[in-house]
Each structure stands twice: as C-alpha cells, then as structure tokens.
Image 1: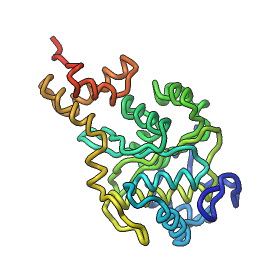
Image 2: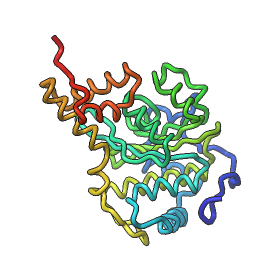
Image 3: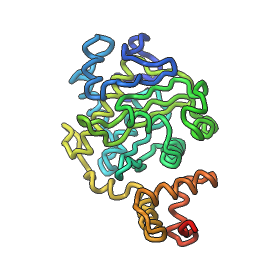
Image 4: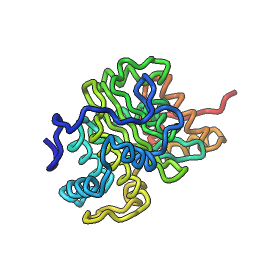
Length: 282
C-alpha cells in the first residue's frame, strides 16, 4: 500500500483510457503532448485529473526527505503510488537531442536509462520523438526490430512492462519520465492520471516552479549539474582527440559502447581515466 488513497492492487475502474493507441500498446503517432492529454482524458470522463489528485501527490511528496533533490522525491513517490517497480528520469541535451540520465530509483531503472542512452532507442526515446506517452504493457510481445538491442537486455533485467511520458512544455520536450514493472499489465485510468500528474510535477521542477506545500530542497541547478557529468566530460575529451563536434564525439562513444556490449557511462569513465583514447579514422 502506498500513500493514503492509493493501492497497488485495488483500482476504481478497469476501463482503459480512451486515447488512441496502436496494437503494440504505445501512443499512436500524433498523440497529444502530456499537458493536452490531461485535458483530453478529463474531458472524455475516463479518469479525473483534478486539483484533489494533484494535492494528494503533493501531500505524499511532502513526506519525503527534504534533503533529497526534488526529482528523486518525485520518482520515489511515483513508485509508492503506482503499480510499478521503478522509475527513471532523463533529460534531452545537445543539438541532436542526446539524452542525459538524471536519476533511477533502483539498479534496474538505472540500467534501462543507460541502455536507452547507449542505444538511442527505447520507450523513453520514442515518447520524446513522438511527443506523447509510450505505454508497453507487455514488453516481451514487442518485436526486436522496434528497439534493436534494447528489448532482450531489458527482459533479462526482469522488466515486463514500461510506460514512458515526455516532459512537454508547449512544443518543446525536456526529457521523459520512465516507469517500469516486473510483471505484465497496463495502467488503468486512475493510475494513468496519477502518472500524468507526476510527469507534470517533474516538468515544473525543471522550470524551477514552486510546488505548493513542498520544501524545494535542492534547486534544479544542483542536480542538473550532476547529470551524467562524466559522459559530458568524456565527450569533450573525445571531441579534442578526433577534432569533431561534441555531438559526433558522443556518437562515436555510443558506437564503441554498443560494439563492445558496454554502457556509455562505462566507456566515458574509461576515457576520463585515460584508459581509452579515440584516434581519428585513417
């Protein structure tokens, strides 16, 4: 049982939200961004995204350790409130939209974010590209071609379902909130509505907006400055070694990681520790 009013097993309805989805279980192309989806969900009466729902989430957040960065508190509360096993948060950076790992609530969540960062594919990447949620109630049923190199290691890590929500501000996507669970199954209406509230709150913290009744703790600059700093430091070193742009340097590191079945974080650490050097192509 999570915070007051939430349950991992009991739900008030079994009817799925009436947004357009393909048979694979993800949001169809052209799905509304999250802020507009909130309005759409409320309008069709499938679930209620109300001030009371937001207040319930904020009350749960207020019970978290105020010494932790806000995004960590939001992710931790989401895991308590929703029928999920873990949560990850990543941001978008660079001219080509490279992802930055910010936080994972557990080793599996961190593994999922690292995989997507390394491969450049996965539910989070797709949700950012499409500008709408990607809901995958049964990961094992997805064809390997959808996210090459991602599905098998995700299943081996014990993941059976994933739900990714873009952090949308108008036409701009700042990143994605990624939820996963260790059993097959989708999110019912109330759970989806709560997930959208968590997504909205994460987005608000990125804009440095205050959350009513919640001690802000660390400001966004505190934790954004830590996000994948090793990867960015390594990218700068590879940029100098190869004489290329920072984006191309990151692409070379990702390719190296993929070919050697490593994460990009591991490759970056080798570069920073000067155990790995990239040489220009002859």
